[in-house]
Image (tube, rainbow, N blue to C red; front, side, top):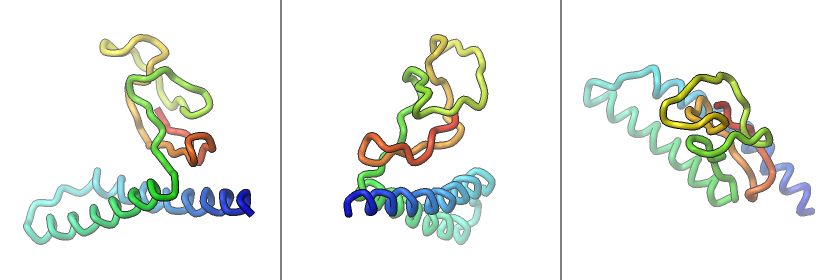
Length: 112
C-alpha cells in the first residue's frame, strides 16, 4: 500500500544519506590538484548529483536552513553563536543537510 511505499522510500533515503554524508566528508577533505584527481572527483560528483536527482524524482527535498527561522521540527541545533548577519532565532549556518519527503515527512533534521 501507499503507506508501505512511503516507509520504504524513507528507509532507502536514510541509507543513501549515509553515502552522501561520506561524499560530503570526502569532498571537504580532498583537494583535487592533478588532472587525474580532478577527473576522479568529477566522476564522484556526477554520482552524487545523480543521487540528488533521484531524491527529487522521489519527492525528497532538502530542508531549508540558512536565513530562515529556527524550526524545532526540521532543525537540530548543534551550536549557537551570535551572528552579525542574522537576528536571533534565525539559522545562520548549516552543518549537515536535512531532508523531507513529500514536503511533510521528515527523513532527517538539518544540523544547524
